[in-house]
Length: 124
Image (cartoon, rainbow, N blue to C red):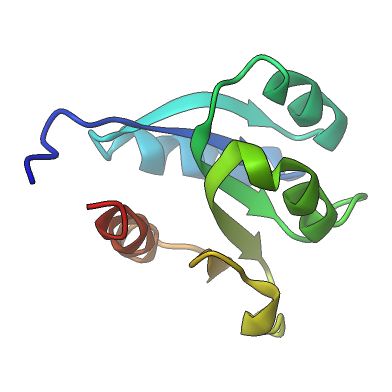
């Protein structure tokens, strides 16, 4: 299957502005990813999702004022893949559904890119 011209939409939700900047840079370095929005506020992100079609990737911090797992449950039907981001590796893999991923901060580009490629390969 030729996926050279396929683009995958993505959204970042993380309460750390510096981490959002890192993720935006990573996303800009992957030709097949298109950033639709970046948010530090879960409320702002939820409001924006009212205007989005289906999103392919949600890069979602677990530990915010509102649990990332709660946000994921609310947005599950609007997102193909959720990539949970955490500073702790203690979250159970059983919390992940639908082939979602858990990435641990600090996150390097290679780990990010490998995770995205693994999820994209599930769509081919």
